[in-house]
Image 1: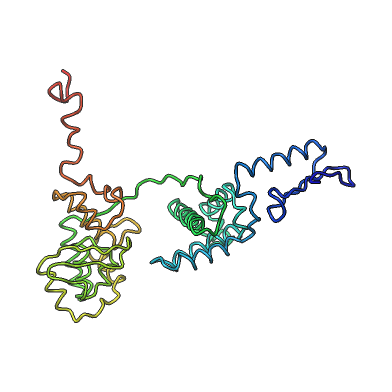
Image 2: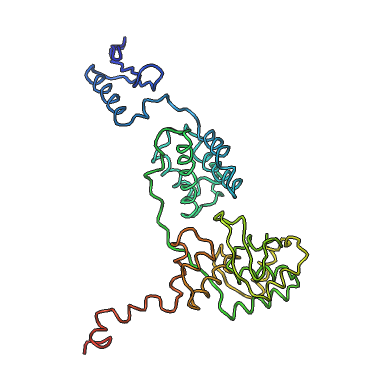
Length: 345
């Protein structure tokens, strides 16, 4: 019998919601009617949500993260960085039983992250640093992806606890780019720094819209007459971009060795050139500069997408407003234009 009276006078509902071996639910009630109603509720829940009948999954979040890394995460380009961020999340949540994580748990976790109550995944003193909305949104996406991937692989059979939680809205970040005069100052500072490899990396980025890492890791085998083929890209797809004859000859004449690590030198060159850049946009300003000038020169947005290697056109559309005719229809299609001017005299 699943409902029986206890020595203390209460009624115990003790039910396996889909027979022996399935999830077991036990709860006490004051009256027999309440216990029977609870039993019926649990059985109805199983009809609507079959996964509730499966054997209870008591694996902790750390175990799922380890499993995800073994089965999928190890193939990512940024595998170590992603794993590190997931461990921060796991520690911040207190390494709970993964199947018991709720929307409320996540909401309070990200609140503690935003207010600086958690740093590097551990509760700390007032010295802990607050993180940005962008950071918690990124963590949200990473943890959600873990559950999604393990579900696809058949390792998890319950709903993603983060599925219906909305990420925070955040304003579009300032996208800095260099004017012609600033590009001249930058190139002058690079040449004056005395490191030809730094100058060549900057030239590649400004000529092709490449990311710093793509340019810095360039090999001689990626060069063909007046073209560079970028491999091991963020989007995991190779792409080929034309370059000038002058730049091709300059790059092909190298000894074939990888470029030296000179990112920190680039930081100093930015200071020498007296360029004011938004936080977090040090080398990426070169990519933004290429895309901005490409569109201002009348370039096609679809072509730009292919050059930059964006898988989603919406990312490339950030540069659409640089096109000479962008939104110019507003001048001739507004209601006042039909009256012959901007005035209704």
